[in-house]
Image (cartoon, rainbow, N blue to C red; front, side, top):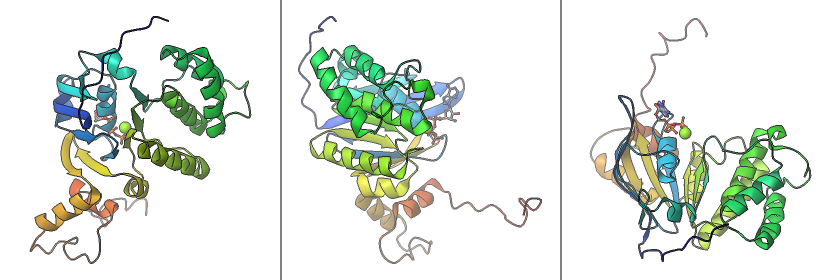
Length: 281
Ligand SMILES: Nc1ncnc2c1ncn2[C@@H]1O[C@H](COP(=O)(O)OP(=O)(O)OP(=O)(O)O)[C@@H](O)[C@H]1O
Ligand SMILES: [Mg+2]
């Protein structure tokens, strides 16, 4: 393993910053002029409806997909200029997991550890502990191809953690994961953010996001619609709705994240029930 020289990280309070980030697929604009700021140490929930551009953004922020235009700074470094420096400091569980299916879990972790330049002794200590934590230690001979969906997800998470990243990018970490593993994951992520790790996650499980995330951004059709703490988002809607008799303005008590999300994304569009699906119902 070649030891690459490391340069000291620039002092910035931001874990991630994007400037006018755009990704097109032919004529289609999947991410549209995105300006994001993610504070270091925050638990950042990146929300949006299906097809909003969340996974495309995560892939660009982690160097898995090149942007069409715009700039990405991760821990103060320009991703296009210092991709290796950035990649050694981040962990990612992408949408499609990217595991080598003919390996066992332990082999995959050892491979990942070596890729990040960890010493053998470090891998020997960390890999079994991670497998234990993810409840993947019981069948050491099992190949990843034989894992269930949730098991693969937990292994991908273990791989993303083995080099102690400063930022963890998780695309739908709770999808397909059982209630016990989900609890373990929530506890682990809370502990890690308390120690300074930044978590950047996408999730459709808004109850979990509401409970865990310190900061939230919402995108739809590739455009940023809202960003801030949940309290700030609620405040914004009260101002926006001031005087208007909308459903939310009449709301008594705090607005839930789900209500806010549906309001801001325009999901209150009602399908004319009488006309649609008559054949089915
Ligand atoms: N490789 C690709 N080629 C063409 N279009 C793509 C490609 N990848 C994504 N898109 C399109 O970009 C848009 C955003 O997709 P993306 O996967 O980022 O959405 P998402 O917010 O992660 O949605 P979901 O919540 O369903 O995971 C979608 O319309 C999708 O069809
Ligand atoms: Mg996605």
